[in-house]
Image 1: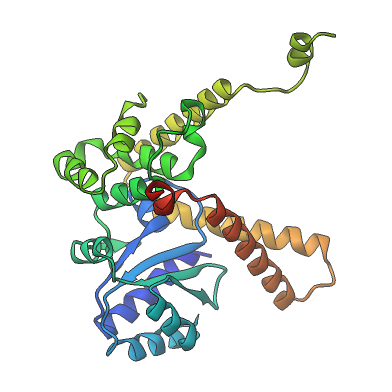
Image 2 (image 1 turned 30 degrees about the vertical axis):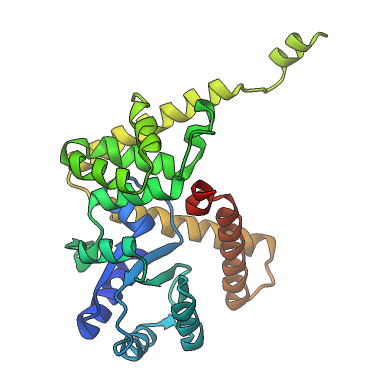
Length: 193
Length: 101
């Protein structure tokens, strides 16, 4: 029982010991902001500090994560996400070392929160929404009738309407403009709920 | 029977109807999430129970269909299924490459 809580509890201990900057993004962040849905992974972005990686990997191992050092370092070199399976559940960690500017930005703006009672850093709401827009990309070619078939669009609309009053719209609009996805944002806002 | 009549008789659902069904579902999700917020229930806690139930169902289903499998073999099978679904999901993702084209 309580696979997610169990993992979050272990991660709290890992990050407390290694003092590596981290931020939880993806499905867990979407759920945290109110959209209850399934997920198979816990997406984490960590800071690029390779002096701390050996300790980080050893801690993960000692907390029952199935870490393959070679795979982690290969992912680090190739700038890709590394999957680390949990020995205690069917969930996995998808770890990405921050290289790209958008990854560094979300890492530097992470907020420390209690997730199921555990102190961890999570992406602010605006960054979760921005991430969804980025992964949707341009949606001009999708007919209205098909829009809600996409998980990212469904996620976006749910957490957007759920947290409408709390969103810093000025900031979000500015960020959307920076990534050149204004038309996507406008189209999402035009869906009347 | 003409096409219209056969359409009426079949289970055909138009794209527009599907959109409205999905929109209704989205609205219900927002409403139920709002209710939980008022009750101060942590969404992660509910998702955790839901995900636990999902894995349990998978385990039960595989065990029933393959009564001879050991716990280790069932675990392996579940991981294979999860990896496979993830692969399908990745192929479907629109993402950055898509909008940069």
